[in-house]
Image (tube, helix red, strand yellow):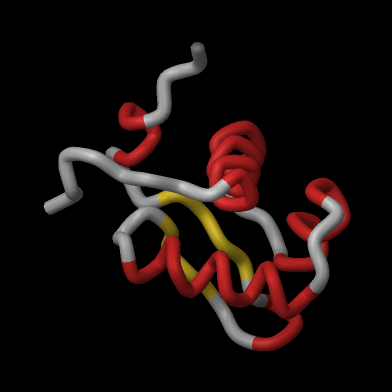
Length: 78
């Protein structure tokens, strides 16, 4: 069950918007498109996973992230 109100940082909003647009993506692609360093991306993805917004697939070089099913309706463009 997802929380009613989700307070996301600007980095997290960018990640969610990017994943909503492209679907599944590697950490490297996310970092490149959002100009984030590896440590920041790791922290933000850990927070998004804990909130139940992002799923992780694979390991090491095959690692990919995507939005959890049903979360895309939470983020309606302004």
